Length: 328
Image (cartoon, rainbow, N blue to C red; front, top):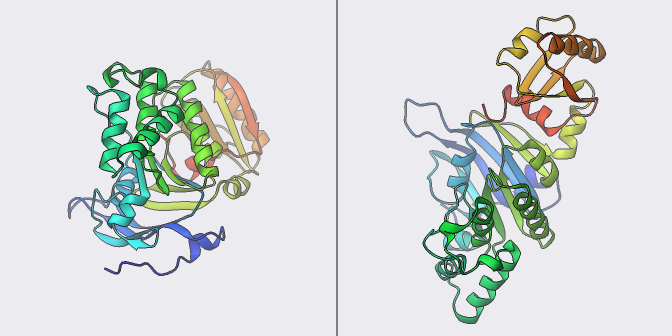
């Protein structure tokens, strides 16, 4: 395998930036008789962007990240990171990885965790102490620096997990569900830090099930389904493409499982998708469809607490291409 990749083409040309990550026709099968986890997947992540990988459970997101980090070998295809093929030492030094489950030692303190992972990245002496202090400040956990991590809250563990991936100041940061199941303050802090990292020139690749989070943070996204890229592009372009005939209704409570099936029997109602309490409809005559949907909701004792018409959300785009909820 060559150590240097050819120049990036299609994906990075859209932004004018060189490619930080090039994934070309990547496939992965865990068993010969099983469907592929990744199926001829190609994406380009330009330098200096926040890039989101979205998809339902089982879409291939974690498999893709595992290959990028060198934890899995692909069945076919290639990966080029910072101009190098595969998980070379140069590539590993360029990457910071933040896994979905906090990779911390619970019996060590936050400071000791940072010192340990910093030494693994080759940091020593004054430079290590400088980076540990900076990471504690970035995560806003100085007050808990010398407490054992087993006594940390979930939000503090997530913050520590983030800065462990930053201890060596990587060029590319890869995060798998960085804000799942944490408190709003910690989520807001992590969002703020990711924006600051982006402003400093770090390329960020993340997966998330939170469409609102992706819409707020990401410049570009790829939506995966069954291991394939269904759609890829700038978030603003994807929203503009799906804005004209969409209705998004937020319900006052969790609906019954058969809600979409019953609503689709009503006159004028077209395509419907349900994700939690968010109902998204696409119809040739949206106002007629909205009237029918509201009547149908009322018949089931449900109420709409918010209605958006003619302005697509990333949730709508996601449901359009996957045909199911983000946690399906």
